Image 1: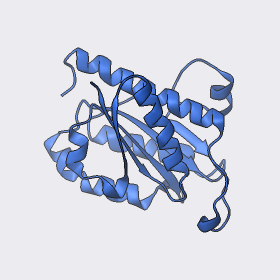
Image 2: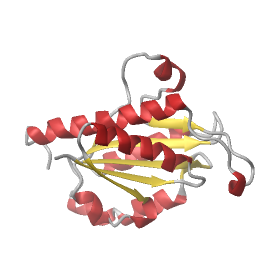
Image 3: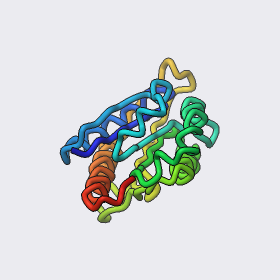
Length: 185
């Protein structure tokens, strides 16, 4: 069975909502999935996964500080190379169209590349959802919020959730294929 770890750092719940769609997509193709907030993750948790997807809300055009703190805790895994060859995927949310969604996705992907992971793009057929909401770097959602996080509004759209679901399934399938060839470390 393919083991998938989905990790999120969410300011107002939107990134966690997107993570749940990714979890559902991974489970739809038979994966055993764990879902954790970034502050709950112990580095060793990630070493047992075949695929890791991590996501963050945008924070001043960068990753949420909670995700940055997780990256800081992964130094030992980087040094030992224990995430090398694992399959990865990224996802992000922002509250405005120009809130840095691609910058956040790139930063998340770069962290995976530094670990030696194989990052799966979020590409696919040009469906209406992909044309309206698709991003090749990972799953994403732009969800307007109120100025006060305690009264945050909105949720990712149905199209954004659909693409996240499909991405969870795609990353899982790639991990399964690589594991079956013995190419994963």
